Each structure stands twice: as C-alpha cells, then as structure tokens.
Length: 122
Length: 108
Image (cartoon, rainbow over all chains, first blue to last red; front, top):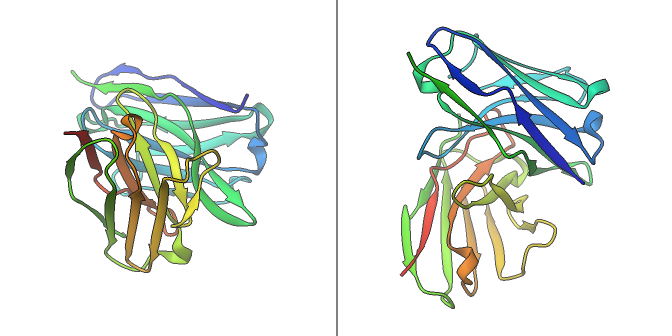
C-alpha cells in the first residue's frame, strides 16, 4: 500500500524545537521530491519546504527560513523536518506529501500523509 | 512569490448543478504546473487535477480543469453529494509552491 505516515508532533513552548518524521512505503521514495505542507487551525494550506530526491536541492518558505530544515534518509525511506525557534504562528497540522512525476513532468502532490499536529504555546 | 487568488470564497449549490471555480495567478505559472485539490474536514487534501487539465488517477470525468498563463478554472459538471468540500489551487512550478486561499463548496 502506498502511504506516508507522519510522527513527532506535540505541544512545545515558544522558542522550542521539534523534529517531525515521515515514513514512506509502497513507492520508490528515493526517486521522489518530497514536501512539507502545513495547515493552521481553520485556515488554508501553506507549503513549507521541499527536498529533491538526492537532497541536492532544498527550498523553504520565507516564513520558516533559518528556523526549519528539511532532510531525508533514502535508506530508511524517511523524510524529516527539524523545527527550531518555534513560534505560536507555527501551530498547525503538518503534512508530508510527494511531488509526483509523469512523463518527466511534475504532476502535483499526489500522496499525502494523515498529518501530525504541532502546537506552540506557553 | 506567485500569489494565487481563488474566487468565489464560498459557493452554495445543490446536487446536480454545474460549478466553475476560478484561480488567478499574480504572474504566469511555469509549464502549466497548476494543481487542484479537494479537502474534507479532518482529512488530508486529495489531488484532483495536475498540469492544469490532467485528471488524477481514478477521478470521475465530471471534474475538469482548464487554463494557462495566469487564469485557471476547475469545473464540476454535475455536483454529487460527496463533492461538497473545500477546493484549493496550487502552483508547483516556482518556489515557493503557493496555494490559493480556497473555495468552500457548500450544500444549498
């Protein structure tokens, strides 16, 4: 079965850190560009960060640059998001998602995890 | 950053009706890398359309996407009860891969 399973969310104080993990199965993880997307309570979707298959390139939203680091371990079929200097506005459900490829072209985020909740509060 | 503006914010319609959702980009979307997603409460988003007009695997043909450049639309030809949800567009051609603010489709 094709799936992504996030873990590592929880309650943390402002200024604290968390490391999210995303375990992939059922597809060739090492060939896939992976992403983190978040959704604050009652709000829309916000792309957070992206990493290419080989980890050669990473991209992040301005709102998290310098605080969050995306990484992956292809041997473990796992994606990570190290979140430091957390702020109350980082409170959200965090999803990992695969950027699909069809015929060599990008094809949207086709596989999503169930999400993990991060709450930043004193 | 490419800003995506979806309209309308909310639509109240009845099953069987036809609906067109709009997504306008602040600058041209590279290679028509524009996707549409459906999200229901408590669930992850589901990919509907990629490349502006390509249906995701298993998507009923009542869903269709069109557009290029800065103007894109998602059309549902005949609403089914399970189609009432929030719809987001996203451009994934240029980092940051921005989303629109969403359109809520509610039952009238």
